[in-house]
Each structure stands twice: as structure tokens, then as C-alpha cells.
Length: 397
Image: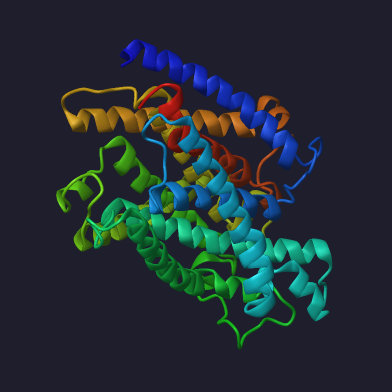
């Protein structure tokens, strides 16, 4: 067993190593100007990062295949499994099965084959990437709610593989419904003419001042931040009140998690956009950059993702920083620390020099073609790989 002092030291070392790996992988895969593969277009890169993030959740939290024994072999096996799941999900299922034989817009090749107006490779890939991003967001959102509130219910006590497949199909079922209602109308409205017989016109346009589903990304990411905070920084409160041990949950807990995600998400979005309105004034339909309602909603998701990243940094590398006997005092301190670190990450990304140099971006804010979500989700995925697959082998639990 390591001492608390050594745990923090090892965490700091791991955090520094993670920064180096983050920089290297971003420059290899995503960096738009000086990168090798330049996948940040931005939707293609963003959908890739989100899909891999979901693959980690699927392997570690849905199927429960994570390294808690300290076995480096098991960690490597789980890591390779997450890569295989990502490839099969993105390139086999979305591009070559669902896109080719079911829903055209999930595959850029299938879109181009239709010969429609404006369907050249870059535009087709961006549209299909946006659809995949939305579908994966729905999967992550429902999986986060299920893991927080339901846990392994109602399959407690069954084999892990049975639990995993049951949770996967259950979460996928509800995610498809979420996607169909909140995201599908946006995709069908992208084409000329709008595909009004395949999907309804975006029903939220009057409220959101945009047909874009970035509106839903905003409150969903915000809701996921609150659920992650309750699970990771408050030891699962209040969901633990409705279940048994650390893995079991209940239907009541699931409903509570859903309510917290939706209500908390909209409250977060209202506060975040009220602050934006204070600095940038009211957005308006047809506005550009920070005046664009679409950007305001996307920026809410970006801010929530910064806080999610801060939360994982505080939890994984610095053991939640504060451990008093009073859990409410601990929650308040941790929340303040997470918000402070999140704002620091926000400042770093949008700074005039350090952020643009690190992530290879043009300085400035307000361009929806330069979303921070790609880098943030990639960073979240890297930390989760370390936490779920390798941390127990390197420094213990």
C-alpha cells in the first residue's frame, strides 16, 4: 500500500506524463495545421473522439471489463478491446452496415453514391460525422444515466457477460429513441431539399433560435457533468440510497438520475447562456460567431466538457483532493476545486498563446468550426484509459 503522500506524487507524475501523451496524440491525429493526419475537420475528428470515448464506457462500465487487479496484461487486453470496439462501431457498423443498408446519412460513401446536390467527399463526411456524433452522444448520455442510477439492475447476480449484453441492448434501445427525437430532425434538415418525410422539421427551433441539435448537446453534456460529479465526487449520492452495494441500483435510482440529468442540464445551460448574454449580449437568428445561437448552445457543451475534464483530473490524479468526515463539506470543496480547474482549462484553451500553440488552433472564440469538444473529449478518453485499464497496474487503486 502506498501512503497518501506517495499517491499524490505518483498522481502528479502520471498527470504530467498524460499531458505529454495528449500533446503527441493530438499532433499525430487531429492538429489541423501541423498535424500528421489532420482529422480535425472538425466534425470528423470530433465524431472519432466521441466514438472512442463511448467505446471505453462500453468496455469498462457496461461490460465491466476493466483492470482492478493490477494485471498489466488485463489492462492491455481491455485497451486493445476498446480500440477494436471503436473500429467496428465506427467504420464497420456506421459506415458499412447501417449507412449502406439502412440510413444513408451515416456513411459518406453512401451519401456520395446518391448523387445529391452538394454531396462531395468533404461535405458528405462532415454530415455523416455529425450524425455519428449525435448518435454516440445519445449512447453516452443514456449509459451515464444507467450506470449512475440503475447500476447493474435489474440483472444483479447474473454473469458479467449477461449483465454487459443486457445493459448494452437496454441503453442502445433508449439511445435510439433519444437520437430519433432530439437529433435525427437536425440531420434530415441538412439536405436540399429538407427530408421532411424522413424526419420532422426541428421542433425546438422556436425556442433555441436554431435548427441545430447543438441545443441538445448543451444540456446533455451539462447533465452528464452533474451525474459524473455525484458518482465520482460524492460517492454515488443520492443513488446509493436506492440500491444495495456499489454496483446495484434500482428503477427509482434510474428515474432520479434521469431527472437530475435533464433538470440539471437545463439549469446549467440557462446559467451559462445568461453569462454569455451578459458579455456578448443577446444572440439573434442569423448572427455570426458569438452572436450565433448555435454557438451559444455548443459553447455550453464545451464548458460542461471542460468541467468534466477537470473532474476527472481531480479524481483520477489527485484522489478528489479533500477527505473530511463530513461528506457535504467534501462535496462543496470538491465542487469549488472542479469548477476552478475547469475555468483554468477554459482559460488555457482560449488563451492567446499557450492554448493555440498546444492544440494548433487559430486564436479567438466563437467559431463553430473550431470546437474545443474534440480536444476535450480526446483528453477525457485518455484519462479514462489510464484510470480504467492501467492505473491499478502502475500505482495501485
